[in-house]
Image (cartoon, rainbow, N blue to C red; front, side, top):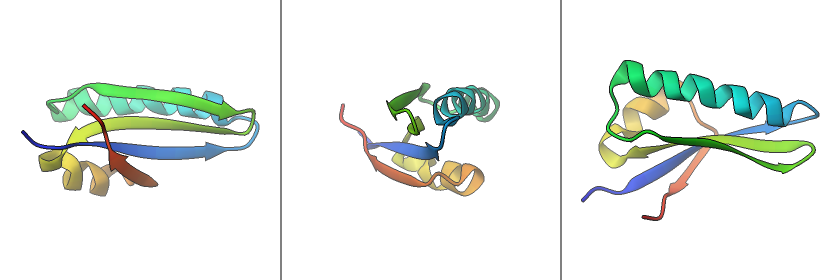
Length: 79
């Protein structure tokens, strides 16, 4: 079984929450277009001025997605 990796995009400022929410829409579109095996996405608001959008990919897809979408960071996604 391959690892799952959570790719993360950070958004800061007064529009961070709305920007992260909107970014998730594009991540979902990318999954459909590229026919990726996982469809785990989301956004999380941590404060009035900080939010993230994320997408979970497998080890096999990580390099391709990373190079195409340029996330700010990544972490191992727990099963």
